[in-house]
Length: 337
Ligand code: ISE
Image (cartoon, rainbow, N blue to C red; front, side, top):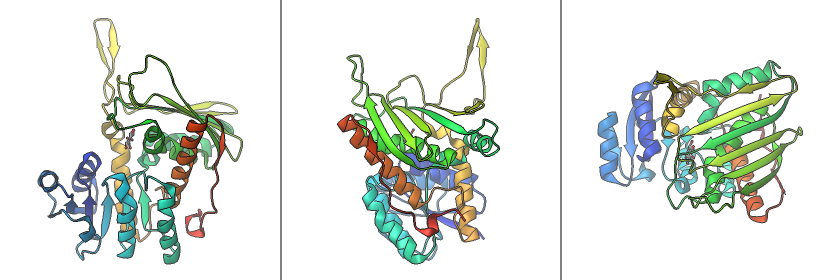
């Protein structure tokens, strides 16, 4: 079976996903790309060899020549487009966040529960990154004893002026929140948040530190700094009772010259997590063929939980106090078999 994939959104992520689907994803064909900006849509369609190009997202999921929908449109449109895909019984891969507010995800959970099975996968691609996968294997093989603390550092080069402190949590740190749950296999029960308040900071979005406690009593710390300037830099370390495991980045070259040893940082997440996106998209297409989402992929429930933790962290940032994370019970379709 060849999966005919439609990509909705031809911005930074949509264009990259279209390229990956067209050139690096087995058993997939880029059936169409869609964007309201016709010129931008045509550029991506031409660059990636899409068979069709549309400007109306509402006309995509119902097409007979579309088997699956990859949603990489603006965040605020994700939930409605995912709902439309469910309506047409089409599997979807939705870029994070599944919705800017977790309450907007509730109709998606309800529809999937009514169906009795999942159709949505959420684009927390770090779950497919080989280094995070090796860290998770080390935990499951008890190579560091019982996990106690997970430290995550997430630094971007820069963000647009409209990217504010709460977005550093709801947009950027959602990755760290999901990977912490994925690595530890637990839920978070409380969160604190604080931002730097120095005179020197040069951004509308200062570094934010999150501290979370899991239901098993573990601690997760997340530094999210979206205006770090020097490079795109994601770090991680899991501390156990008998050892630690650290994230490594896919460094392809080190230059030694004039008494210096140097390596380059990626400018953003696309090259840094290129392998993760490729593996994520291939696993998603394989899941479409198999008739059920890849078990590693984040579900709509995972998207809801991360949204709920992020929403609570923003409240904690504003109040300066620790807030409990209140989650409803997960429906059975989201529980590991
Ligand atoms: C972006 O949307 C991503 O998903 C990147 O992984 C993250 O590093 C960046 O901060 C987000 O804005």
